[in-house]
Length: 333
Image (cartoon, rainbow, N blue to C red; front, side, top):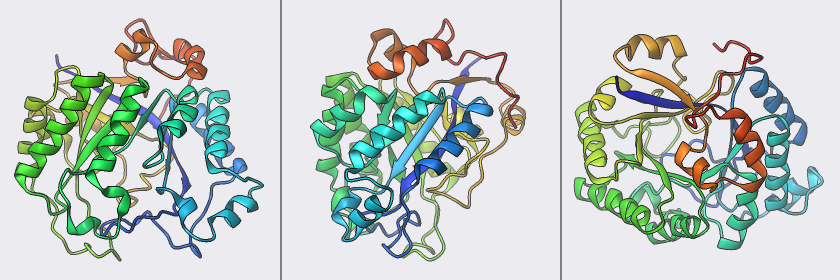
C-alpha cells in the first residue's frame, strides 16, 4: 500500500507587510492594515497547537517588510528592534511548547539563514517559476535567479528545505519543466530538498488576477506526473488538499499532502478550508495515510535539522522517523 504523508501544524502569520506586490496575493497588506503578531498571540496559538497534538509551527511572513516605510514603528510597538531577533524568539517559544519551527521568511542572506538555522527543523521558499512573469512585475523578490540562489544558500548550510512551483499564473509548460529541473539540479548538488509543492493558482477576490482561471485538473495531473518523473525519488511531490482534489494527483505520483491544521486557516489561501482527517481517509482509502514531522526522516538521521530542535525531534519521532503518537495528545478533529 502506497504511503501518503502529511504534517499536522499551526499557521503563524508573523507579519503580512511585504515589499512584493504579486498580482494574485491576498496575504500582503498595506501599512495601515498590516499586523505584526504579538508574543501573547503567538503563545496562545502555540498552546492550542500543543494541546491539539500538532508537531509543526509554520512561521510565514511577507518578504523583507523592513524595506516598507513604517515597519520599524510596528516592531517598536512590540518592543522589538530587529525582526530576525524576534523570529528567533518566536521559534524558541515554539520549541518550548513542543512544536518544531518551520520558517518561510522570503529571501534571506546566508548570514540570516545561519542565524535561524539552529531554531528550525526545516525551512522553505517557493521558487514559483523560473520564468519572468507579468504576475511578478512589481515583485523584486520573485526574480527567479534570486530565489534559486536562496535555495542554494540553504543547501550549503544543510537546511532541510521545502520549495515548489505555482501552477497557472501565466507560465508555459516549458517554464514548468525548467523550474522543476532547476530544483532537481539544486538537490543533486546539495541534497537538501525534502519536498516540491505543486500548488495550483487560487484566484482571490480583490486581486488583479481575481478573474484569471484556475488550472484544469488534467493540467495539474500532468504537472504532478512531470514533477515525479524529473525529481529524484527521495524528494516528495506535495499537493495541497485544500486547493485540489488530492486523489487524482496522488494517482499521478504525489506522495505528500503538506501541512494540515486542526486550528488555523491557510492564511495564504484563506477561503480554502483544510479537509478533515476522516474526509481524507475516506477519499484516500486505498492509501496509507501517515503523519510526519516537518523534518523528513533521512534528515533526522543526518542530523541536518537545527541543533536547538534535536531533543524535541527525538521525542516526537518514532523509530521510522515519522510522528510518534503520544498517549497524552488530544484526539484531533
